[in-house]
Structure formats: C-alpha cells, structure tokens
Length: 157
Image 1: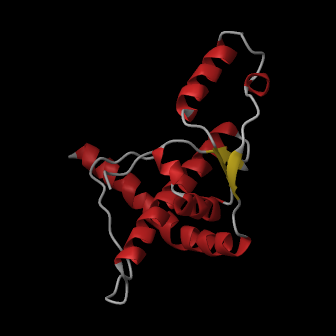
Image 2: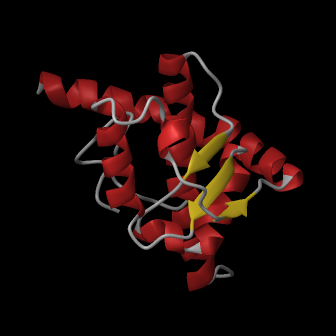
Image 3: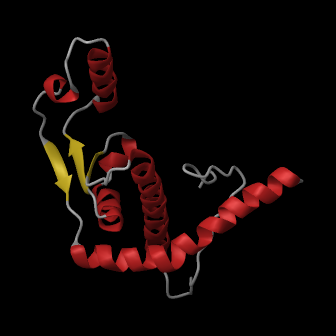
C-alpha cells in the first residue's frame, strides 16, 4: 500500500474498500489486498500486450511475493495466465546472468541458455477467471481513469 505503480505511477494514490461491512474479517481484507494487486498486474499485462503486440499466456514469477502460493493462484485466476515459479533459491541472479550471456553472445538465445528447471505451476481456474474478469471490467477498470485524471489534475496545480 505504497501508492500506485506501473503502468500509471501515482505516488499519492490511496487505497480503499468498497462494500466492506462488519461481516467481513481481517482475512477478507487481506484477500482483497492480494486481489487488488492481482488486478494491478492484470492492468500491467494488458498494457504489455499492447506494447508487445502479442498475447501473454504464461509468466515466470520470482521474488519474495512469489513464495505465497495463495497469492500466485489469485494472480493466475485474475489474469488467466499460467504462472510458473521456478524451484530455485536465486532466480533473479540466474535471470540476470542469462540475460548477460544472451546479450553478450555467449548463448544464441534464451532457449539455449536456460537449463531445464522444475517449476511449481499455477493454472487459472476458468470459473474464477470469469468471475474476476467481470469484476475487473465492471469495477477495477472503471477506476483507472481516476488515477490518470488525478495525475493530470495534480500536474496542473
């Protein structure tokens, strides 16, 4: 909850819950935070697809947040992407080394550079994906202009 990040950074963005009642628990609130982050990833994925002009079907996820299997399943369900979490202790370091190897010509491609690695795979559940898609399009996506308009308003002050 440290502002809004890519694809529309907003250092003063605020968080909130819509529809929160006394029937909701701390667990519900925590899940909502994870879902909100997954919606942010979906927004970023949509923008990446526009730039790359290619659909995204699979992501390799690394880092501290990738150790939370519940969060990864939510991200898979929201995005519809297959997520793969490599069973490595230093994924980021390996990725940097592989990029350097491909970039310097040591390897002809990432396919040639990447050793076989076992990964935990998270597949989207079609029913949950459809539910999350509806919420994204009818809820989250409607709030995106507020982030963009607020940035514009702030720059004019």
